Image (spheres, rainbow, N blue to C red):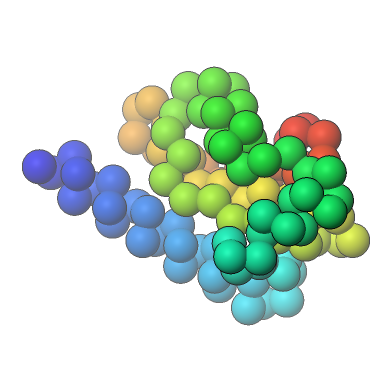
Length: 99
């Protein structure tokens, strides 16, 4: 039960971190209801593909993700809970899948 509460807490913190970053004028994160059409129009990698790539690459679990515009390109901003409990912020280019 503590593990579930811990993951929920980390997900909430990650959501606040992504939201705060968006408000600070750095990335402009999109509402997921609009993301599907943007992904299709711009030939971006689907969120589930990026999600799996990051989990495989880090050995962790993605607890939150957002599609954002940053510096004229689309990126996925992810919060990853590492295998030893550390929390990492990961940014992935939405077109190439590269960090």
